[in-house]
Image 1 (spheres, rainbow over the protein chains, first blue to last red):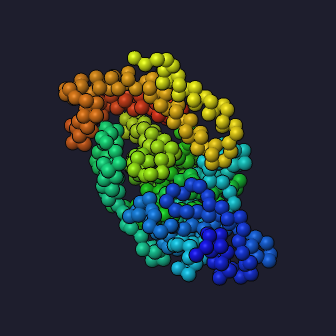
Image 2: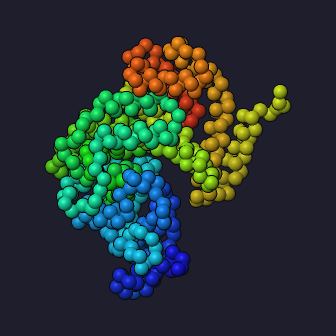
Image 3: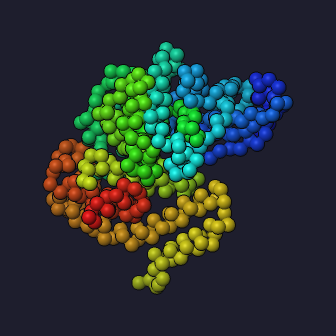
Length: 329
Length: 126
């Protein structure tokens, strides 16, 4: 055994030619269900920035929804090979590394904090291009051949509605607005998608590294699955990811039309009605996740003020759902 | 009857102290967590001020809409059940207005700076 730093130093020596050790290992905050570490690989020619993603033993926020870190590593590698902006996977952890399960990738420079991406001068030139760029990125992800993918859950709209209803009833008392949204989802279920593709599952601010030139990397394939590709287009339009820029539905920086244009220019077809269905589903999903945070606050010995306050953000999704389903202004 | 200052005044004084005197001394994750803690105190102060009137109005609306006299949680359970069964719909008289008013009253406490809430409040003032 040893500290994470010692184990990492030994690990990089086994696969990185010329590596003499590591430096500046820091555990990053953010990423609720897995550990993320940033560190530098030291070698004769200088240093290479790297990121470790690993799961501590027996931990996972939503184990049945998670693709697993081994699958994440494969997906990231496939995306990289297909030209999707993505970190390069350097090493998949083995039992001999003693670091748990996970992988090491190169560190992509850029920003993930939404308020900076949406407000800082540095990204002013990137913002008008982002929605269209992300449309192309999604088209490329949805175009990955299924035969090259790891084992993933296959989901349909009906299965996701059922799962969401179960989570809602487990996490919260009766909420008339959530009930209305569930009823709407059941009544408007578009049925199984004609096209079944890889779905990233969490394509939004926080999981996208942005630079002055636009999107640089797609992160966090934890919720990847097979299903309706329109799910990814709907999720990035959820108001919760607009961070106050409520008139720019795509991440607070762009329009649906730009997203769809980028998607279609890359050879795939967007279905606005299905995207809207998934936007409603995504809005309710984030609301239910907020209720889940409240439950974790209540039941966990660690009395996290952040989780407690996220619990009180579920009402944000109620007003968003009413604006979608019962608009008045 | 309890003596003054009121809970709202005490929480306000504690939040102001943390905001004005302690926050400038912190950086990084500690500053972030303190900001969240101050937000929690501000939320509690809003709830102490606003909840009695909004709960009373919500209960009165629900009793009228449902024709039932019960506690507020029970009234909400009944409305949720009727919505799930399709007996209360957005085109049922009073339902949409009730859901909107109840949600606006929640946001007034939870997140009065939320963009969608501010937009809806402005639209109602016009």
